[in-house]
Length: 77
Image (cartoon, rainbow, N blue to C red; front, side):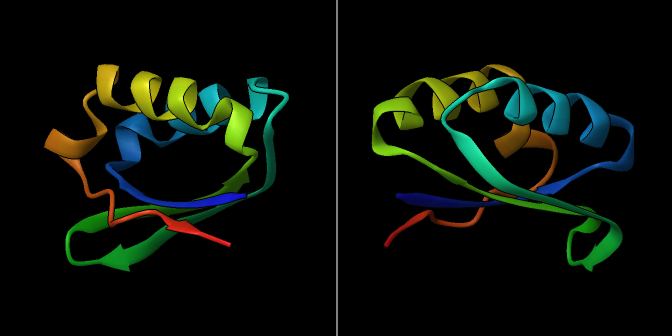
């Protein structure tokens, strides 16, 4: 299981959450609006099964998550 944490600008948060929610390999999806302070934004966290991880991470990169917010290192559990 891969644990993903994303800090998303408020204007992209809904799109990111929708992308994650649509993937059957994503579970425990949590969106905390306005919770992030540095950088400012919404805190999004979820767990992703290994089989879906590459696709989910690729789609997040395609959305520009790394450039407009923050995506701390992922951790395996």
